[in-house]
Image (tube, rainbow, N blue to C red; front, side, top):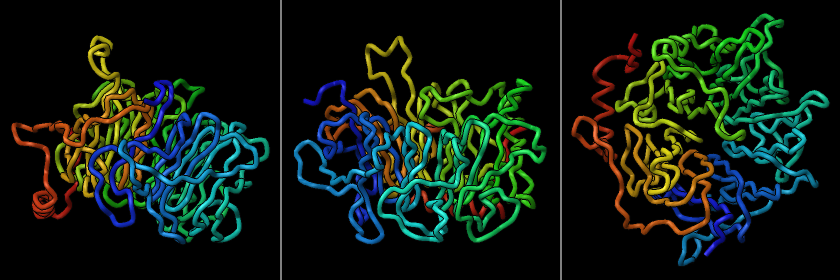
Length: 450
């Protein structure tokens, strides 16, 4: 039995190049008893940060086409071949993953990147060169400290010194916020959220989707509540109702302010844990955490990823029902994972956290024992451990938990009902339902209630 103080990673979803669905969590046994501190999931690969500051990588590379989390033979789960990334002695404090790229931030705030260099997404000012080994990104100001980095498919955003936002990579939809479209930007460029340079905003968090970017910021000197800015691809309502004519520049998402005021909510000041997020983006949807631990969601909903029980795109944010007191969460391409704290009164009788999942599930990325879509959050009941974190890739999911055994693969799966009808929707019935939504109106955007 693994020591209770050691944390490990569980994985599920599309875990190999054959595309087979792994529909329930399996423990990664490639860490040799090391204590995992955080994890990140890309399109076809995963990163695990250990307490010693080392980073282990497993997954599919374009040159070798190896498995994302290759299955081995083990009675207790899965064996995952992993490779340790080298950083010339730098101790790593956080990791992030993009499409075919990986990023790491050292304790002193320096950023390293490696992987496929398409659209200059690695930020090394060397065109589109691939990097097999981690290399430091030197496009940030001297003596600056990078606090956080987030990855879209082919662009990245970084928070520097709490007030500055830098972006680089692809810009075909204006996702870099430069005010114009271009093929790519080869090195990090600072952008202004407000045209007035004297308006100093304190950035709480930032997130990148496939081709859009969202930043949560506040005017600290004025004591104002947080506000959201978005820019990039305006399709599927992913920008939250901003002026699409100016989609290549940062714009205030006014619809979220209206929703917050109407529901008497506020955006969370910070995550429960410093390395966790308060905003996260999928391909075309966004989740924002509130002070009550609930979610506001907007953007594309045609895979149920907004969690509101339907397939509409939403321009005005809606509250995701059934989830509150969220500790940490992650968005994949079209699915979401959230960890909710259990009330203290029940903590002694059950595990301290509950894992929820919803959205697309074609590869078992929800971990619910099947490949059926979930239109609202459903409970993942295969883990009994204390959950420390989670990550979501394009088609797979990770949970960081105390190392122990999972339930039997034949364990019952929880379901959620909406008005008496099971929310569990098979792929066939999901396609039929989605076509009905498309046929009902020319544009299947459902505005929020006012």
